[in-house]
Image (cartoon, rainbow, N blue to C red; front, side, top):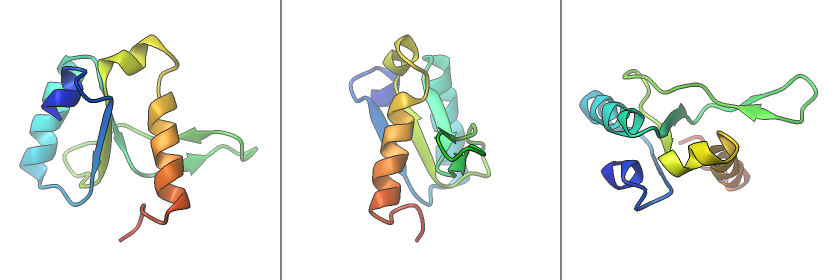
Amino acid sequence: MAWVAQSKFNAYFSWDLNGWDVAAGIVIVEESGGLVSKMVVVVDEDGAGMTSSRAGVETRDMIITCPCERRGEEGLLRDELIEVLKENDCLEY
C-alpha cells in the first residue's frame, strides 16, 4: 500500500485484511492523495456505470489506486480492476 501511495505501483487489491492493516493503509494512501475503495460494485440504474464507495476499517476487501489516478478521471483504474476481477469471478470467495 505504501508503494501505491508513492506511485511506485498504480494499484493494489487484497482480500480478507485485518482491521489494523486496513486502518494503516487508509491513512497512508489517503494522505498521499490516493483512493481507497471497497470491492463492492454498484451498477447505475441504466446499467452503464459502476461506482464503489470508500473503504473503512470494517472493510476487509479493498482496492487502492495511486495519487496519479487523481490526475485523470477519478476511479477509472479502480473500475477497470473491478471489471477484470468480476469477469474472473474474483469478487467473492
